[in-house]
Every structure is written in structure tokens, then in C-alpha cells.
Length: 306
Image 1 (cartoon, rainbow, N blue to C red):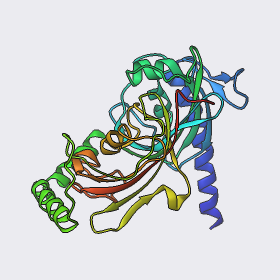
Image 2: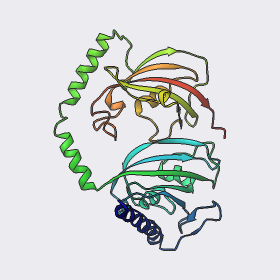
Image 3: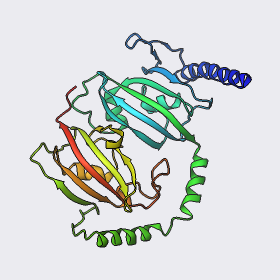
Image 4: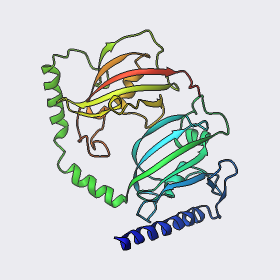
């Protein structure tokens, strides 16, 4: 027991040293203490970083890897405007200080905090205009916990195996969804995209618009009534900037854009507007699965106020 504990501690010490070397090699410069953010170091490319927890792996992510991570974005005043789990293919940084560089510093199990320039993150990485609450030349904080790293070969192999037994699921989903609608006697016409929105509470509150900071509560369940997620049970409403990429599934985004502050609705969301042909990243929601969301627009802040 004591020997294994010593090995773990040694590995973590090696890992901590390796983290510093990775930063040095990536930026071709020794890192320095940040003068802007106490407790942080800063790379040559201008990213301020602090390692928080150290995982057991010593192999950092590389461009082309598929990474799964918990990501949160905060303003310089520490107001959170996004928090969620995302899986994507990592690319090489295409400009100095790009967020991709942050992921390249981390291995599976690591978590770290970063400060990056906000404006290029929105304009270059997300290819959109910065939200109104981001000022020119301002920093934003990015917290990342790396959950999993897969090579392209590993990811593709899993996808081939996965797709080999779901080819018929698309048609099967349509049958199940039709039976549900008939059984529940739901006669609401779907939107052009196929989304069913069933209003429950209507108000004259503020309409949600692109750039607004929106606070929502939602409960997600399968057509059989079994819940798979609930912000109410977690007592943790979801806050995000409406209109930014990778915030909520397309069905939720479409519905939120048609609702007002204080309103509630039930959404029946086909898989192409929910978790698609792959399901969600943790495997809880299978491929080609229609889901139901009970949605409440708790608050709408116009242009975000810190």
C-alpha cells in the first residue's frame, strides 16, 4: 500500500515537471510568472495558466486527437457564461494564444485554469462577434478538466463498430416517435425542423435574442418517462449566452429563441435536433433517440450585466 502510494506521488511529481516542459516546448520559451493574475504563469503566446489537478496519464493531447472535456467560460469579473461537457477533434492553434493551446497542455485527468484574450476567441475560434459584455482587449477565464483523449484511429474504430449496428435505428426512431404522439394525443404541428413545442406557461416577458445571457431550467427525459438530466434536481440552473456555438442542443436553441422570460414549454425533440446519430458523449443517451425537455426561461439579461 505504501509503495503504490509512493509510486503515485512520484508519477504526479514527474507529471508536474512534464507539464512545465510541455508549455516550454510548445511556446519555445520558458514560462514566467504572470504579472496580471497572481498564482498563474504565462506562456510566450500570452496564455496565463495554472495547473489545478494532475491526472495519472503523462501523455498530453495532440492535434488530431478527439478530446472529451468539462469546459467553463467566465468573464474577467468571474461571471460564468458557459459550463458543459464537449467532445471534439483538437486542431493545432491557428493563432498565438488560441484556446487549442490550452488543451494541448493537458493529459487525461488533468484540470487547469487559463486566462486567454477574449476577442480573438470569439472572432477567430467561434467565428462570431464577441458578446456585448466582452470589452476590447479583455481577458476571459477558461477552466478545463480533461476527461478523455482518443487518437483518430481509436475514435474511428469505435465509430465503425458503433455504426455497424445502428443503420436501421433512424427508421425505428420514426416509428417510436409516431406511436408516442398518437398515444399522447399530441396534435401540435412540428416546426419546419421537426421540433414539437407545447406551450405550458405564456408571459409578456422579454423575448430571447442573440447575445442575451439566458438562465434556464430544464428536465430531460426519454419517451418512456425516465429522466436523464434535470437542472432542478441539481438545483443548478444553466446559464449561457444565446446564439453562441456549442451551448445547447439544436432543439433547445430553436425553442429558446421563440420564448420569453418566465415562459415554460414541453419540447419533443427528434434525435437530429438532440443527440444525433452518436448519442451523447457519456453514453447515457443512445443514438437515434427522440427526447423530451421540460423547459423554463428563468431570466433573460439583455447584453449581459456583470
